[in-house]
Image 1 (cartoon, rainbow, N blue to C red):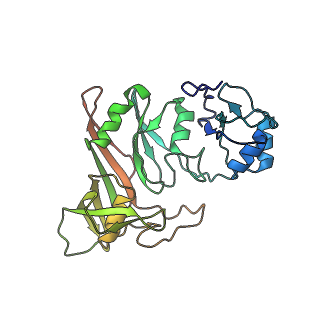
Image 2: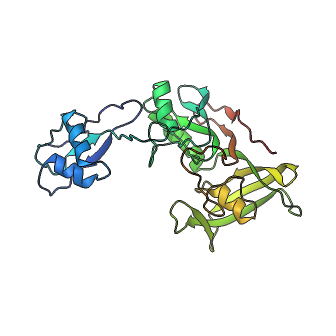
Length: 302
């Protein structure tokens, strides 16, 4: 008898939560047959190894044997594993921690959450393992290529209050960026446009229509052909700052996606994207006090 309301969930392992797959109502064969067919990114031989090792369990917490018959509607849990995961030679810094929040200063090239080729080397998994906080969850995300501040929620009980800061635009976010200098432009100004996913799924593009993104742009200093800009996103669309600056003819230095794709080979960390999440400021919805956090990193202008 399945218990869909309160199924068993195995504890995290080395900072990584278990993944879950629910068997369809109709099927046949063994559990090994199902897993090998449904999740083909893992070989049949690897699934057999995991099942034999007891690394796959059901919603009752029982280990799943390879020859166990298919059982429609059953929840099955397993842990992701990436044998050839890239491991960037950089580390995050924890700037602040209390019972509600963690503020991390993320380096370039480190993803915030697991995706694709990255699992154990992501900021979230590293912090869960380092701090022993299994409920830790990011309240927002910045690109893998971007460095700087990430705000994370420690406990589920107060998470909604902090998530509302981003949803209701009650938090001020400022970024530093290095991009070409163009004389004749008047600062500060705002750039608004409509952003949608491009045919290349990993990129965004500006399209005609009602704007759904807004960025405030100012210049801080100029050195020859380059300038340091202060970018303040009012909205939070994916790649918003990068797309807006490229659209203005001011592509960020070392941007691998905009205006054209020029992604460096894996393991090349010589040209980090010159975009830094500089500061976060907000009124804490739990304590009522004002909070301001600033990165300890900087971008060289020269």
